[in-house]
Length: 513
Image 1 (cartoon, rainbow, N blue to C red):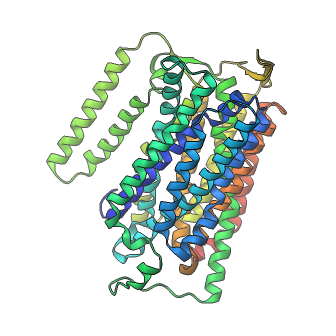
Image 2 (image 1 turned 90 degrees about the vertical axis):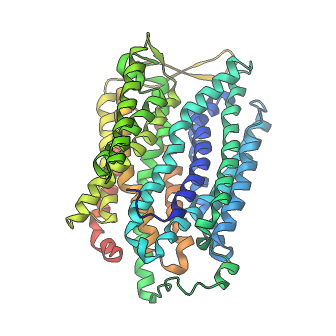
């Protein structure tokens, strides 16, 4: 899995991990913060939440255009600085009046623009590592590893957000609303770590940074840039646009994890858990499971007895720790709604080697699906996740609110659905994500015309941005229609997108060869 990859991959992946940890720590509590601090309705909070996600993924289009002219490395560094300013502004507790709301919106714009300069261009640099022929056949697996690294940061984010907020409330004595800002401050620290990793290991990927100075120093050993005819360029751009149109609907459905699915966790899911189930809400237990998975693969794939011995020892220690932690359980464990967001990154990290092994085996037999076909399958899997939510939502009451002591509307907890529903839903959504997201990014980096790489990667993020803006549909439907119908909307759009993808499959697979 990790063999034969360029060294620069790990440096860029770790730099991205730091940035993503801060981003997802902030995002884990953001929708709940909007409702609690400003007294916003679910629809209005959803509008702000989805608009922020839209800007985060829309600005990479401009970031890519700027990078095509000034270089990817410069834009990555500039983006981190701008993001830092935005998170720093968001960390200041200013209350819940209109001035505080305006300052918060300004901070979101800075974060969105900074992310636009950073995120897409870093991924273009990862793709360019594989322009070297000796790494060309490792492109898909490399992006799977890169995507896994992103989710390592996201895995710890919900726990960090909750623990830091609780520390600010219980130890430092801050009010519930002001305590949210401590969760946002984590992003500032993580960005410092991210830029440090970037510059410490810069020598491993400097050749991918681009820019006029880099272009002037021509490497005679570097592979020649592919020259395409106008017709080939047009066909590739059209194919990419077709894929962009499909992924819009995936992200519309997938990113309900921070909005309507979080509302469901807060208002309809049991607030406590016992026994084996409760162990799933301790992130360190999830880390032990991840170690068991990776050590298991190493046990069977290692070529030396020493390597097999180390893997076996890790498995024994991790299993022993899980058994010990289970024996120490007493009573029930409290569940906070944002904690459910740890399951998606956990599944990504744990299942990435499984996914790579399956597709590696299929590739060896000449039966591996193409990237466009994997994307279509991902849409079907996402539809299945909402079919599950739809099935178990029949008979549940409508969401309810009541007026709090401050005169602001407060969501009411009206049911105690088993946490296993959301845990299972996130598992299915993650299968869809692993089929679609890393493969989509790899497809863009492979198919994009050389002269438009930055812009085309930006186009991927614009599609994601539109999908994220459509996340607001979850907020608009919440409390306006029965829950089963809310999930049915996302089921329908995923199925329609999958059908469209299969209709366009021949055209897409032609340019993917």
